[in-house]
Every structure is written in C-alpha cells, then in structure tokens.
Image (cartoon, rainbow, N blue to C red):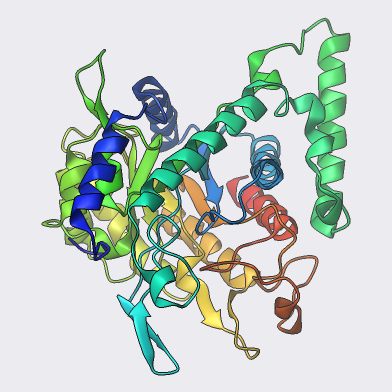
Length: 431
C-alpha cells in the first residue's frame, strides 16, 4: 500500500484499530447522502463547490477560536460566490480529519541524520528527532477525538446562529476588514443587509433556515487506510457501507493507481468521493478511474479535482474533460490551483503566488468553456489566521514578508484577505 507508515508496533496498531471500530461514527450516512445530492446539483451545473481549509490540521494549534476563524473565512467566500455570481454554493471544509499528508520521499536527511518523513500529526510529529518521527498508532485515537470535538463545534456554529446571514458583517475579521478585499466585502455585506430589510418590509419573513443557518460538510484525504477502514460502518437504512470519518473523502494524486489499495477501498464505500488529477494523467487513466469508482454514473458520487499548474492547465485539461463527458460520467470538476503552483522564494520559503493561483483558476474556466462543461468548484488551502505564507493579494505579501508569520507545518496557505480576493475574482468568472 502506497504512502502508508511503517508502523513499528503492529500489535499496538491492531489494538488501536479495534478501539476505533467500537467508537461512534463521526458523521452519519444520511449526512453523506445529503452532500451527494447537493454535489449532484453541482455536476448538473446548478451549484458551485467551495472546498477549503488547512493543508494539514495540527494537534498543537487546536482551539475554538481557530475553528471559528477558519469557518468565518469559508462563510465569507461562500457569501461572495453566492451573492455575486448568483449560484448556490456547497460548502465543504478540509477539516475534522485532515491530519495526514503524502510525501514525495519516505525519509528526509538533516545534517547527515536520516529519519522518517513527517506524515502529519495522525502519524508522527514535525520535530526532527527519532522519537518524534516514530509512527505512533495512539495518534489515530487523538485524531478521532479532535475530529469529534471539531465537528461538535462546527455543528453548533452552523446551526446555532453564527452562520445567520444577519451576521454577515460580523464575519469580517479585523485584519481582513482593513484590506481592499475586506472593504469590498463590507460593501457586499451592506447590500445583503438592505436586501434582508427589504424582504422584511415587504412582509417576507427572513426567519428561514436558509438564512438563519447553513449546511457545512467535512472532508479529508483518506490516506491512512487503517483509520478509514476502522471508521467504516454499515448503514442500517440502506445496507451500504460508509466511511464515517467524514462526509466526503478523496484520493490523492500519489495514490490513485487503479490496482492500488486506496482505489479498492473507495470502490466499496458509498460516500461522495474525490480524486486529485495531476498533469501526467491521460484521458484513458481518468476514464478508467471513473469506471472503477463510479460504474453506475451517479451524479454527485465523484468529484475530479484537477491540479495541473497555471502553465499547463489550458493544454492538459480539455482532453480530460471531453473524455469523461463522452464516457457519460456526471462528475463534479473542481480546480485545486494550489499544489501545481508551489515554488521556493528567494528568501528560501516554500510559497505560492496568488496570481499563479488565479491564473490556474482562469485556465480551468477557459478549458471548461472551450469544451462546454461546467467548472464546478475550487479546492483551496487557507487559514483564518493572519499568516504570510503565500505571496500577492490586494494586501500585498512580498518575499520579505514571508518571514513575518510563516506558520504552516506543510504547505503554504492563503490568509483571510487573499481568500476573499480569490472569491471575488472567481465570482467574476462565474458571472
């Protein structure tokens, strides 16, 4: 199995798997079916998918404020997309389970010492010592517990009044509000307030669930199969099997082999699923993958997340779109404009430039329009913290600024201002 840890204590791993198998599900099959139904609307060109969150969640940075601030940014982006572009936005977070990361090499060497690579807090620690890098099965239990706490808070926020559109201005964090994108959001918020007041003055009640609360779903890369298999449950209503670690799970670019363990696991679950598609994928590869995991051609079942890079998306994507369309698979196509546009800055920091991110999104839309298919969504790495990890944006982050608040454990993330900037520009493409 690719990208799996070399667990040093297999009896301990087996005991942890048994313990996880006895714990309650984190999400329910009915919730996953609801997301699949909404993604079916995206596949039909009737809605847009916003999938966003951390590159890798941390055991160390866990807290209510961090969850709230991340949710704020995603809600702001969704409001911009829905109000400005006039299409419903399906909100899916990279949250409550995004604790594992694939790596290009199983080990890394520092000052002549070779140790296992950091695989995310679900497996080991980022600190470079033999004990920290030793894969520890007990971390799977920690990941489950933190995911449960995160889900509880997300449900409280999204159903308990925090996501009420009457509070749309309150979501604008202080450091975002001072940016050009934040000021543009303020103007949009004023327009929404006026629209709600007009409805109420006209005798139309604004006390509707669609205004007072929102649906918010969770997702992560289902990388560590021992964790995913232990949390897979048989639905008592339908008899189908669901991975109850998240509403939606996806396969990474490094683990999408047709004869691989990840594809085989995904074939057996009924969640909505995703798969990352990189620049080396051929039309034959992608259609074969669709046939393997979506043989019934079910709308909302499969989301293909392209991660081509700004320089190659216009060349590589159209033939894939045509092949999948002609094969009759009603997939959601989403754009991951982050992973194909990573580079090392002059200051030595791994980063991305917002203009490169936007260039790939623009190429993604152009490819779809050239073929006549629907550009269904975006998949981005972001945080609610005021970090300086990606360059560019209306509140410009330059190379020298990267050293100010570079906090990511793995990949560079957009901050709140950059995320809003991206949302406004995607809304313009949707219009």
